[in-house]
Image (cartoon, rainbow, N blue to C red; front, side):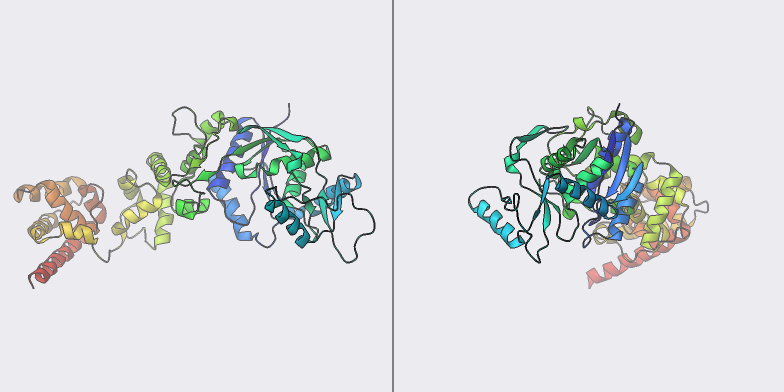
Length: 474
């Protein structure tokens, strides 16, 4: 039985984005499901646009997601001699030819075809050329595509696809500078690396017939192909940065968990009944690329955040503390200047979709805020809240055991003494000590802010109300 071998072949001309990460995941899952091998290949032949930073970001993204590879990374730039060797073989066997046409002529031929409503193809001018080579002209090497028949393949997602050879032209294999073209390098790599299943984006469907013809010319094994639909934004347009199509490592930096991202990526076009939550083990047991939907998937940032919050709620506390500490470093917060991180995590894990959200939602535990949220202050730090704030400072100032039960009792005492509903007391207090209207339960918030900060901030809130009152009267 042939061992399943899949590959992920990113180009280091950009970072690892959502679409590429999903392709990597699907390829990884398919190999793992069927006991195969997952190969990483870096397609870095675009020397002008490839960067080490992009390559490292791709490797970091795969590592963060936990998509370990069994072989590689292989680099196409290290295989140029192999491509030239196969090119010479095709030339010697009469399956390729040198083309001396200038780029201007090729462009003119294609434009003429386009103006007649035909496919813009090279016309094969040099296909059967004889005689001496033109002096001073470095040729490209073209593949002799079959002139008759059709290429047929059964795509694991889109089903049977047939393309007439008359629709295909003699594509360039080797550029004038000796570098291989994409379609040629990919074919040689897939053959040499014994790839059995090629899982890639729908935008590669047009390349597949060309690659199959070259594989057959070489007498090589033709892999099974699965082209997964592209991912679109909520507006139906191609996914871009405005839809959240940023580097996968940026999601890591923003406090998303890898298990949430994997779960979300898997559900972009694949499903198993009505289930929404899948860990990697279960995905490995269930995934089959043949079950991928043909329709484009829609990237929903809100759905990803909802899913991430599910995993934040379930995550190990010590792990969340370490991740929250990293977020604090990014914000310039000192975790030692406030409550233990374990207490902050437990207070906020039920309401923070990401670790970045958790850090922003807890910054007032660890540092002073510059100003009250304008909308919250306008609503809750009013003339009517002055006696509430004064009574709160008196009652809370008497609390020696700064723990949740006595703190809750003190706030309740103020509510009853002033004959006010709890909200009329808790909300001014919440804004006074946090600067905002949304925090954990008030007793939890008080405990985490601490006695000294609470009393100091209550004083500042009263000064704010007094100044606001004076301004209104003048």
